[in-house]
Length: 280
Image: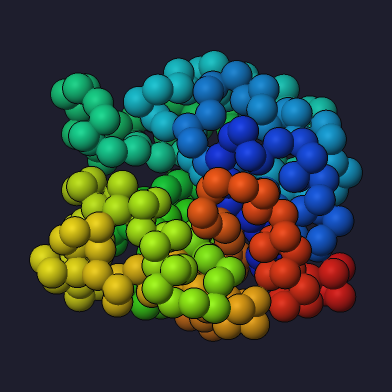
């Protein structure tokens, strides 16, 4: 692993994750900003974030293999690496089968896509793979720097570490809501969580973790929401984030919910509770 992510980063989508938020995240002591929402192969947004900052890493969470041409993506990687060496982690993934009409099996698509990136000289040490199930987690360990699981729990992190083994990057995403009122916090988190409960890869992973049909119905049970979107005051949220580190994660990507409004105060409070500025 050649890109230094630190132990905690932020995960957000455009337009909220812009140069201003990246600059503030760097000042707060976060090690990386993860750009969600399937950025295009030209990676112009990634370059903007790197241009605006001085040392924080930028990662994609993730570039969608069905949407981004791998040859163009590789060229973009090399352009960015030449300009900002060692600061960019290229996260790629197969996305959701519900979103594409392609005939190729998802696993075969991942393998063929990684083959092209290999042939185009993208180093495995600068790649991360979206991975949930055992088969793709093993592929992440074999073909990339490691895995970037999304919508998971510390128990998944523990299982993923057992599969990956030591020395392989494990960087799960964790949603958080800074609100001490449980009912209100769940209402804030449920719209984002529920959008994934109709997607087979996420549902299958949650079932492997022991969640039931009742947990997955009606936007998600309270028990499901409580694990997928840690909520409470800053200290409580920080403990939920650290639970992934305790379970074997190298890095945790924090996604503040809800997406409406300014997320910076919450990111600031989480950074303070985790002591990020002191670590820097």
